[in-house]
Image 1 (cartoon, rainbow, N blue to C red):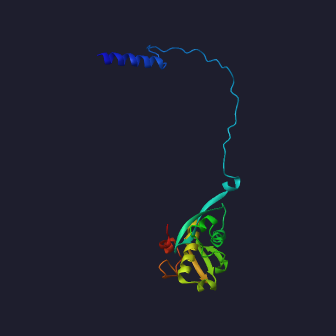
Image 2: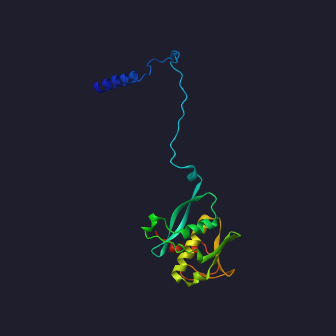
Image 3: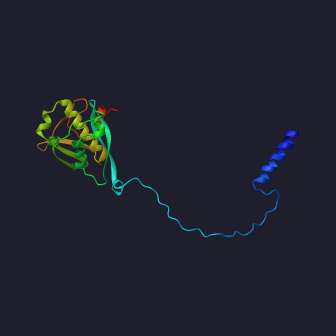
Amino acid sequence: MIRRFIAAITLACVVTSCGIPTDNSARVLPPVTVIANPTPTTVTTQNNLSPKQLDNKAIVIFMIRDGGLVGRGRLTSQNFSDSDLLQFLVDGPVPTEVSLTIRSGLTQRPDLFNNLGIENYIAQIELSADFTELPATEQVLILGQITLTLVGNLRIDGVTFLQGGDVIAVPNANLEPVTTPAQRSTYAALLVR
């Protein structure tokens, strides 16, 4: 009984101290008096991105690591071209990736391909005669780099490789010859963490 009485008194104190009126009728509040007019302020936010960075697009290129391929992020302009993607592969890894034993089979080797074009959603790359002189495992890694990078960043369905203007058979991830346009699935088995 005493506990209920103490609880009721405590509740009454809490209700009245919170400003909740205890009467059952509505009360008219006194008018508000403005002491000072607020001055307009401008709020600025700190943006760590430069205007140039805001115009960039993130892409993924594929590099070689431990006999497999890994995706690496890069920033490029919003209206990048297919040639820009291949140039990233020719430029090779950035300094922070070298310590991760990441490399590109195309580093400083733009002589391995002659030109690149896109027709009917299929990229067509002319490979040079020097390409066929590479070991088969290196060929597969380079073909995988090119295919995964182009298919991952362009609106294309696959990549066809040519020599002398003719479609050639290229090795897939299992070193089996493929003459149909290479797709992500052609080299997906090479992906490593």
